[in-house]
Amino acid sequence: MGGDRIATGGGFDNSANDAEGTLTTEWGAAIGDKDHSLVATPKGGLLLQDTVTLQQLSRFNRERIPERVVHARGTGAYGYFQAYGDESALTSAKFLSDTSIKTPLFCRFSMVTLSKSVAETVRDVRGFAVKMRTSQGIWDLVFNNLPVFFVRDQRHFVDVIHAFKPDPQSNLQDFDRVFDLMGALGGEATHMLTYLFSDHGIPASYQEMDGNSVHAYKFINADRKVTYVKLRWRSLAGIRNLTEEEAHALQADDLNHATRSLYMDIKQGKFPEYELQIQEMKPEQLDDFEFNPLDSTKHWPEDQFPYRPVGKMTLDELPPNFFEHTEQVAFSPANMLAGSIEASEDKLLQSRLVSYFSAHEYRVGTNRHLIPVNKPANETRHYHADGQMNTGENKGTLNYEPSLVHKAYTDEPKAKIYEQPLPSGTYVQEEINKTLNFKQAGDLYRSFSEKERANLVYNLECKLKMSTSDLIKNTMSSHFMKADEEYGTRVAEAIGADLETVKQMAAALEE
Image 1 (cartoon, helix red, strand yellow):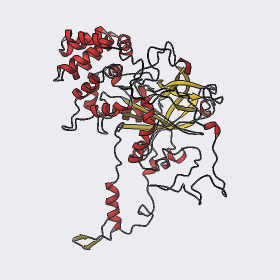
Image 2 (cartoon, helix red, strand yellow):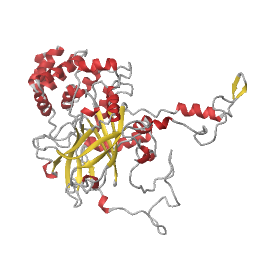
Image 3 (tube, one colour):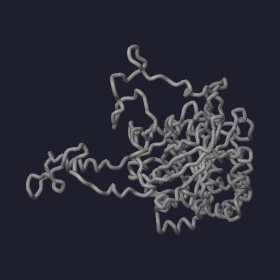
Image 4 (cartoon, helix red, strand yellow):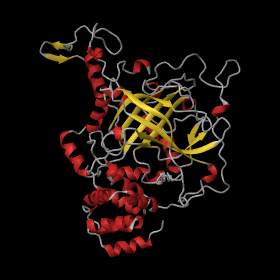
């Protein structure tokens, strides 16, 4: 990253505060009087020809780019990744098979659903995105701290975000809206809700949480053999979470505790470390289970698919300017290494491959890849042209291919997209087979200690008991009961739901 990163070992470069020389406009013209506007009389009357003042005001009005619709509240750091061994049997991604390569990266942690002003103690999913600047191009790992998601189909992704965001009429977050949607979805969100309302819903710090791919991806080796994988960043500091009471107490003193903790650790040389681990599944195994392994509401059981470490990430440098780096960084799950790492057929992932590009074009601009934090480490060669904020990529007369008289860029057969056989049939819009909405949620509940179960029920009680709808209370309780009878009974009793009705509703539910 060279000049894009600060040179000192994790501290701030104080020399950047020293300024010498003549003040100029953004275009390099010297400013003759830096303290006074051009006016018609000493008493006032600003003149339109004072372009320095007018451009200063215009530039100030545009200091803020549109806020991310999701993941708005975030913080980040630079670092590097090193592989533990040779993974060429799985993938032709070079940086995963050469232990001498230190792959530079930028990592951004975030809150998912609420605005930039939200406290970092709020119960919410945390984003965990890493931009790997490999010799083969950018690989963006767009992860969450929790291993599953609320829905399995893109059609309801926007609905989930809308439900969690403030009511458009009152501008107040209302969990009655959340549970209304989750109940109407029929149970597929039960697994994720159990995670979110457990202690995992409020990580103590970004250094003490994991990052999970949620989706499966394809690793492809040089022989064009495919392996499905799920990935996670395992915190080497261990996982630590906050109870609701601990979060409230912390929030009273500090709305930015997670960012402050990350910055302080890096400044003090206590560099956060995360181990990249993978689960592996053969293509022929995809139909061997009672659930669909490409369903984003499910995880792969670790007793059948143990995680295996493949390398380590170290965060060792802070961005010298928050806006230029942390705010302008643009991640997309479509940024993969074709022929080495590709997307699976997960329906939710497939939609994200296109939606992120659209979001960043709106938020940052067409040429966002030229911003230093986003720029690939390897040389880029393409025929994309012009666009807002182009900084000189376009050279020469040739901006098309092929050509009869000019040399043109060639393709690389090794990077050809893997040929995926498709079953015969017709286009369909239907639910996947083997939804299994409740079983893993029940397994998760039973894996908790009694204290963790009590915290989960209490956290759900605090939100659900505020509902004015008996239908919402009974429906949500029935979903939890279908996952585990004790779980649902405790929630129903805590929020005053009708236990007999809940039992009848649970009995009618199908996995």
